[in-house]
Length: 83
Image (cartoon, rainbow, N blue to C red; front, top):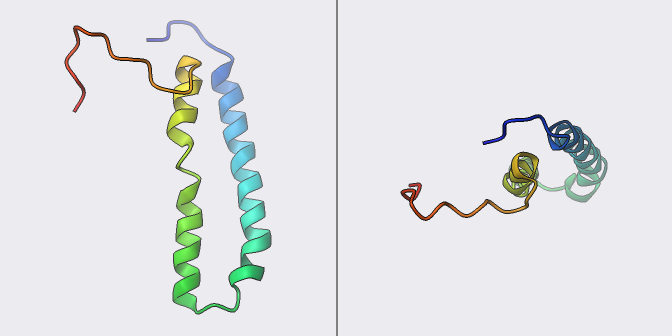
């Protein structure tokens, strides 16, 4: 467990905010031109997928913010496995 503050937390929050802003602008700029003539139900599916796809790298990003590594640290051998 982290005992002292680290620069990764504010940097990570700033990076996450900026990344989401850029992603949102790109989607808002280019998606309507590509799918604007599609039926409403198809557009809804695409926008839901685009609204959720940014979550894919979030787990590793949050692990980096907490540990400084891109993957979860190995569990100690004497601890029970997490379910």
